[in-house]
Length: 367
Image 1: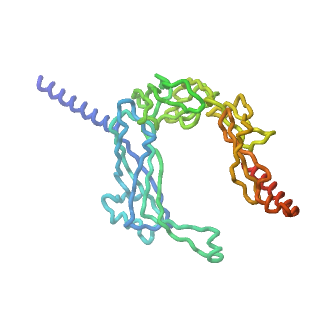
Image 2 (image 1 turned 90 degrees about the vertical axis):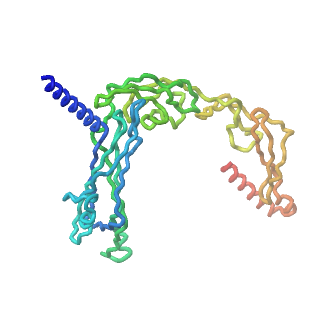
Image 3 (image 1 turned 120 degrees about the horizontal axis):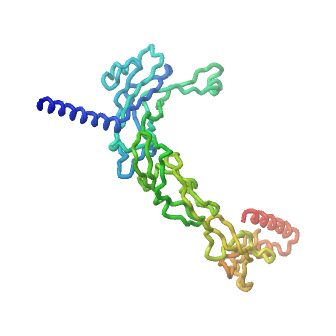
């Protein structure tokens, strides 16, 4: 009797162990399938044939303390009648090079294996098949090149691609998300963007697994924010929406103030004149808002000639605002070279004066 009970116990333990292994394998391995149609107009070059698989790593995350690392491999590349490239390449090639080829499909199986079962998101894949050429149809251009009805199409190497998602990969159950902590930083200026450091959530997946997820360099791809971390905040922003793979996980409060300049900043670009001295103001470095605008203040005795006249254009003088340090420029009339060259030729001088006025208008429009 004892021997019988021992035997039963051994069988139960072995069955349990096998069940655990099978469940672990099921939780860690995900199988995918891609179907790519090859039309009869395509031609095939076996020497260039290859199939490549990539997965979008930015759509996969893992709980804190777990790994989101994975490996993947293509397990089968078959024709519709089950000829596998991996086991029978010659017959596989013959299928696509046959004279009576009327179009077919590539059936591609692959699997993805994760180090940890505590992963979630979306398993988005892209399959790229090389070795086929497809016709380049120039449409209406063909008749222009070769006349009406001319066939100027040509087969060119073409990548055949398929993008999709592997079903059954765990995703977040939105009803279970709890915000454990918001961002560490709450106070900002409108010259700064939101800093998510400190954001941590508790969540449960649709497969029942629970854990936490903390924002950091490794998990940043799973998070998004509104306003984003790439744009300056506004003084009207009072909170930031936080999302994980498109699911809103909560809102964190913020306080945003203007980033005022330490002193006056020039806010005009026109050349200086007695009636238009220009202005400076205290300026927000984030949004550009101004307050306390004041006219520039100069020492009239401090104008310095720039020696920049030409034959038809007047030179300029420079001065510096005593409040903000902006270098101001004004025209120095009567300094153009034609004034002395044609001093005794009134009619020609008048013509050049008109040219001079026109040049000033052009300069004012672009200054």
